[in-house]
Length: 334
Length: 300
Image (cartoon, rainbow over all chains, first blue to last red; front, side, top):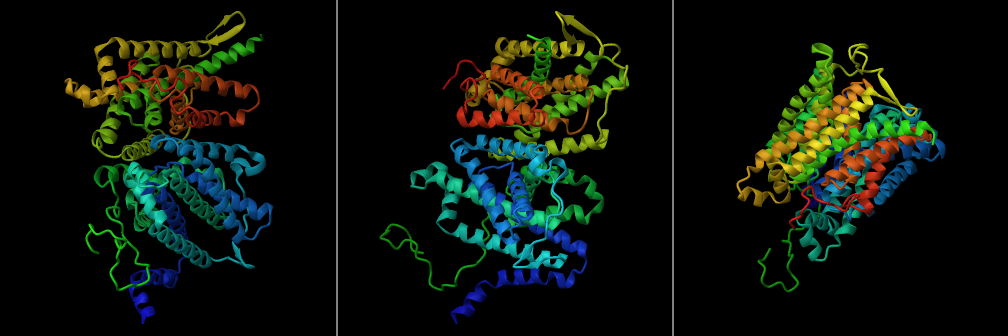
């Protein structure tokens, strides 16, 4: 009985998942599947940036750096060290997270705008290093012939398999972030965003939580980078310029931030708009720039940013939540 | 000491003075509004292209080109201020920042549509013999263009110093920078002052654009990106609110870049400014001179 109720409570989410899993039945065209895969990659990236910009309120404008680190780390691990892809994926996440720690640890002492500047500087430095360190990154020529992902000996080949792989990764990202944002960690982040001083005063170790959020965000971006490298099979510094970071910001600006729906909607919309209106492809960056300006002036919170949409992914519990059970007699019931 | 060191010194100072001009613009704007703009590099690019068009189409006159670039960038600066800051006075800092990023994306792509993505040059001979003219000071060659860049930069710095410290406009700008509420209570129209700061800062950027364009004779739509960000790091190294700091940091970055080429690190010459910026932010967030305010007498 309880199991059924749990399924019913989560039914909208399950329906959406089922719909996405069924998409390839109706979309046979390889090109459309490829667009969908790219939407998946950017959904993970936008979600990872959302963790910083949306939940903690730290503006990072160099997020493509961690995307790049993930892509290069994964390519290097599979080509030079012959690691299987699953390990390379984990390694890419870990290495990107490690760089995130190196950036976050010293800079979080600084106040808002200075941290933002460091992320910008880091993105520029990383791009220039990737472009000029011929021995390690092969410079502007990039790394070619990256092997396809193989999961326990089963190598992925078709677009369809890539689609299901990225769908799995996106779902893992969404569910893990949902869990994170619903526990102590997530509440601490929201408290920091709303009022850092008050959060600090109520005993939230703001620097620690911000560092953790930064590391997590970087490693999610690294995982997206790893998938990108093995999907496209060729990476060069040009894919990770500061423009890429700006596109991610435009996605958040369009879809909204501070929840899990907005970034995904933003990613999907900004990938789809130039693809649907082919003549626009040439004016792609115009669209992104225009969206940034118009959304900020007209609807600052983005399309879906006004409230925190909750995925109802909890065990169904019919009894009302009693938050104030520990002797808080002054607070209202419920 | 060999004369090539002096020549590199002159090259570095020329390069650095352009960074300094751009950094002054950033500093003036941040000092007054307490807001960062990312469209400054693109304002500089537009200034360069305006100068380029004037020289190519109308008249090969350096001063006319400078004047036209000044006018165009002043207007552009006011447009940026109104779009990104005037309407968003009470919004979080990030909002304005994102609008300036949007404006910079739009301007780069606009330039690509108008002038094409390829690199353009002023046709040979249009500048007359200015390009080849050089003088020899004790075995060190200085070209006319280098003298022009250094001279114009120095002139503008003195002018800016005069305007900020000796005129009524400068006094009002300093007052607004110090405490805009108090300035407003004293009858200063703060909105106009913000626009003025933006216009002056953008004009400095526009002049820098023309100088760089003519000096290297290269004009391309993305020329503002790396230059803007480097000048921005110079501004941060100088303390973000200190005008002398911006000049010193800009010159320093120019010199370091030039000498790094001399000592075989040319691949990584673009990295230095950002490394400086991050180091300064980590070790001395107030900048080289310990966060001196644009207004020399700090109120708080």
